[in-house]
View 1 (cartoon, rainbow, N blue to C red):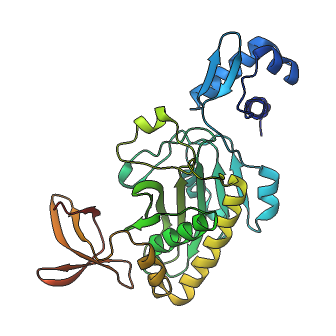
View 2 (view 1 turned 90 degrees about the vertical axis):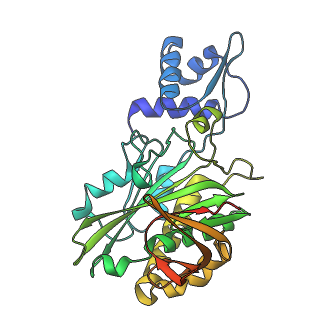
Amino acid sequence: MSDNWVRKREILTLLSSERFVSGEQLASDLGISRAAVSKHIDALETYGVAIYSVKGRGYKLANPISLIDASRLVQSIDNRCFYFDEIPSTNGFMLSHTNELKSGDVCVAEFQSAGRGRRGRTWVSPYGHHLYFSQFWSFPQGMAQAMGLSLVVACTLVEVLKSYGVENIGVKWPNDIYLDHKKLAGILIEMSGQADSECQLIIGIGVNMAMSEDHGKGIDQPWSDLSTLATMPDKTDLVIELQKQLKRDIQLFEREGLNAFKARWQAADLFYGKPIRLLMGENHIDGICMGVDDQGAVLLDTADGIQAFIGGEISLRPR
């Protein structure tokens, strides 16, 4: 960690008490000048950290921030773990180092300057507010072996979040996680290598932990976060458990395929048995959602019978 980020994290720690802290107190505690404190505060705000500044009272965080304990993270994970305060993209970092990685290696960051979502969307990635996580996995038989992996990852994430007391959580095919019917987390799987021979996959996961009002305004769909929980999950513990559970689930997936996860998926499927509209470009198919098949395709009971679709984006059919 650079000295620059050491200072910023020290400031965030001092501001985490939910009370205003004066600039003089921050400068005294850190052994730096008031001007240096102001410079670090300004820099943190450019990284998306909302900080209240009140003349005569000082500074206070507008939203809670949970930071990774890097040493505990590295000690608790058997695989290699890369941790950054800032990075363009955790998926991008892993894609650029596939030749050096082993299945289960992870990359975690506090801030992404170029976070990516599915279909080219931007993933809002302010510093310290959310979880930005990528895990590497190699499939020796190519993409055919990995068909349906995104559903497995969604099942993993639901199981881990439920272990932290998250209720009213569900999945939307193929891999979005919803809390109270608003998007909580997303998954982006990217490939390196050959589709018909050994390929390397990067499994990117983003979880909204404490969304600020300003950041929420920039999102073009209803969203949720974990800030309403009675106890916010410790982000370090969350990453450790997510990495371990994901590793176990992918190993099970390699042995038994998607069939081992169909019951877990159906239990979490927000649209099972409901009328949906599958959007595919300018076309759409209406039907009743009947779950997924062994390849991860969504099954629709349509006017032409039950059909399987492997692409598209689900939305509820208007009544």
